[in-house]
Amino acid sequence: MPPRSLALLTTLLMMVALTTTAAATPRHVRVLHNPTPLRVIASEAAGVESDGVRFAVVGRWSKELQRYRDELFDSWTGRRSMLPDDCSTSGVMEQTTTLTAGRMLLDCSEGGTVLDLASGRRRVLSEPVVGAGLTSTGIDWISIGRRWAHGFGTCTDSDGANRFCDAYVDFLNGATRVFRYDTNAPAPGGYRDLDAPGLPWRSLCRRTGPIIDEYHRVHVPPYWVGGRGLRRCRDGTLVRDVHRWGIPSDFVDGTLALAAGVGGNGRAGVYDLARDRVLSWQLPQVGRRRRPDTTVAHTRCAVYFAATLRRTDDLYVASTRVFRADMPSPHDPRCEAR
Image 1 (cartoon, helix red, strand yellow):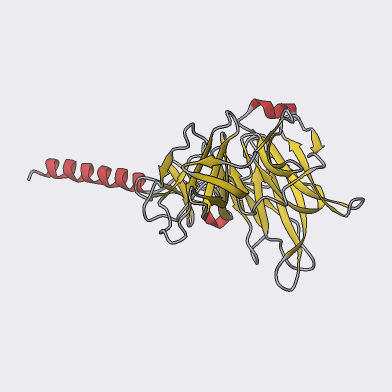
Image 2 (cartoon, rainbow, N blue to C red):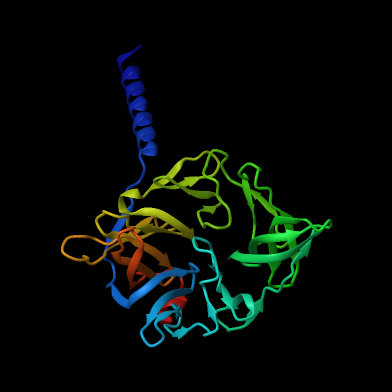
């Protein structure tokens, strides 16, 4: 081969190699440390949860009543208000999605209730729930989506036998669905979509991934939260490794919460998928040396941190402080009204 042709071929091969390397090398995520000030909004609380868009709810300790009361934070307007006195979250199962799209699942004097947080309107989840030859006799309400509330409990069939069952109520039009629950069946590879009319069955986006249902907001096609961060549904590819900035937890409205674990460095925050950035805050020290383990909730306008101050000998959380920080340069213009 002539020297000139050999030189040209060598140059082309180097260009291909450089292009391939650049494509295979992930971009470095942009990290903003302590981008906005932290401020305490509850010095003694049970925790915090949010709908990921507008509202957050803090279980605040009331010295007068000697019990926790739920306080609502509207991050679009900055208004704060207490949830109705006759309602609480105590009758709703923990570790479930009870606050979604501006509505909250509560245990009120009338029973299970879906509360519209903007208007204050209530939708009572009346029993019995009837469907598929089953009639509910006692339902514990678990979670809600944009349309459906889900509960689990006991039903009677047409022969009068008691069965475990899943009950669903569409709180927009009153439709009901009931399904028999088989305790011997293998773990399902999907879940009922509580956001969609008709309550369709959705398959998990990856067969070998964790079993995920409507209790956890960690499956948002085309992504799911697995291991070190966000992964693509089609092949499990890790889109963004974020575990060094926190423990990936809730993923809602394009933002992934990053919690701080026990014995960690006390940093927690969120990962913003659209802007490919991590917002990380250093939580204050607890006691002489310990950094708090912290759960994270967020809206489009703010990030909320529930930091554990004290645990009992059996590791039960005995005291929690809640902080808030504004979301820097938020996506939603309504945040300007804060």
